[in-house]
Image 1 (cartoon, rainbow, N blue to C red):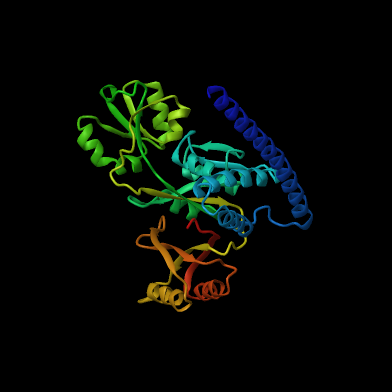
Image 2: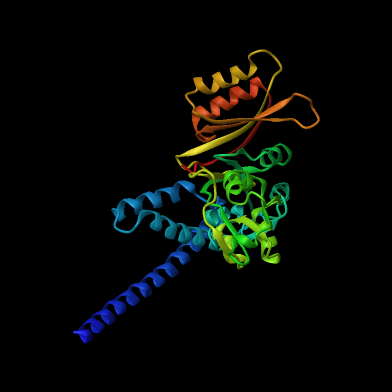
Length: 360
């Protein structure tokens, strides 16, 4: 009986090997076809990225799958295949808030896959500068957190640099307390970016009440510090654990579940409509009563959903503000275009920051 079982297992494994070989051959065929598409796009001077086409691929495969293969895993596998094939048409570089293994880096890998070239920057300001000056094709920047709110350094950089939003990623954030030994008793200081420290405030108060916290410019920098000092604990990403050879002390120390950060992809130009898009604007209203209400009324009358509004002070001008607005729809949509044309006549300042596929 044991021999029969062993023989059956060998047959099954041989069949799996045959399937794997076929899959590899098909992947070779797919990347060759992607390169052909890339050449045709070059000849026709068309954009390399077609978000509508990609969304249609995911929807078709999900429908064909009928839930047999886990849908989330299926999407992840084909996301890596699609991004790798797209990058075969044109190698791209991506700047992010570093060092390596920050949550921003993790979001970049989630969006662009592992085949892109990733460049670590010391600040969000540097990420914008790299993209504006053309030294990187794209940048990844955090823009808001579901618990702590807006990332003001990102909003301020949009007021300073000329870039376009090309996409967004929404990543569920799970914070891990890590150190060299994995022993909580070795930790004398907890380092991380200010936002993760705030998101874990209650846990730290209850479990490490005598440990001071040390805000640093990124979770990756905190992980580096922990890797070099046995008495420093860091709040860091799962990627940081592997990158810096750290041990997990406690997983998931965030105070609230469902903690999600929204990241934006910035580049030189926005993509074509995907059918499920978001448009971001930067507006200044005229100094008269009811000016902001008039702007909001124009958006409502156009039948457009206003997804977000955030104000930021204008540097060097006391009590003057610019407003960041997110509208549902693409600038190429008739109603969005007409609405924006009207807003241009009403606003003291108008800038289209980009239209891009919504992460929803």
